[in-house]
Image (cartoon, rainbow, N blue to C red):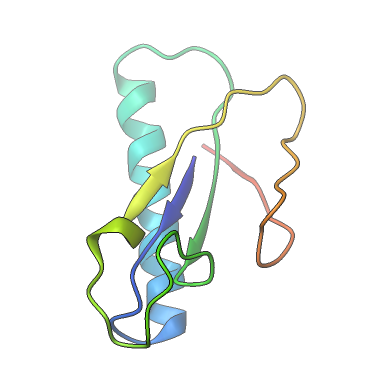
Length: 87
């Protein structure tokens, strides 16, 4: 699971928010019976889907991505190498 935010707020706070969002979504799937290992990461405002100026509330940037993979996924447009956390 990957979490993302828009550019409203501090960069560090958005990173933490996106990380918590991704963790919460992973826990949601786990509670509903998902048995495979689940990993998550948060990119905050550092991987925008819609390019905007700072402090722009763009709903298209507040999102989660679900990746199904047998091995650690390779991300083409990652702002930094993900540090996958296991739920």
